[in-house]
Amino acid sequence: KAVRGHWDIEVMHWYLDVLFKEDSHKVLNKTAAMNLNVLRKIALAILKKWTPNTRKKVTSMRQKRVLLSMALHKFLPSILNM
Image (cartoon, rainbow, N blue to C red; front, side):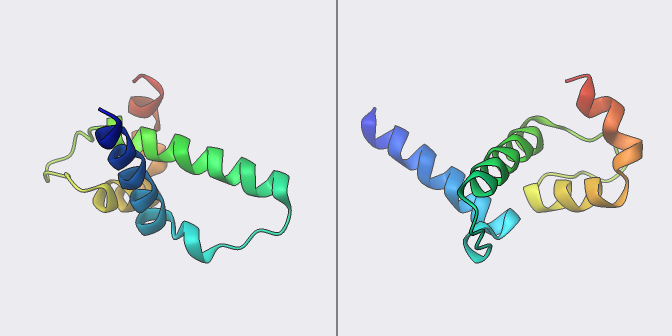
């Protein structure tokens, strides 16, 4: 159980690094860094839970992120109603 919990955390950090390039962002202000970390985790939770209703099948987190960045206004109601 402890090992599974550890790997869940590792996977989350991998997603944060790959999707949001977290390791390459160096924020000097500690409060700003903590705030950005929380916002990234909220965004990650939304991406994991959200299933877009599009003609094309969108399965990857990267595809979801790109889709939202191009048409947030279109999908915002479905995100807010989750």
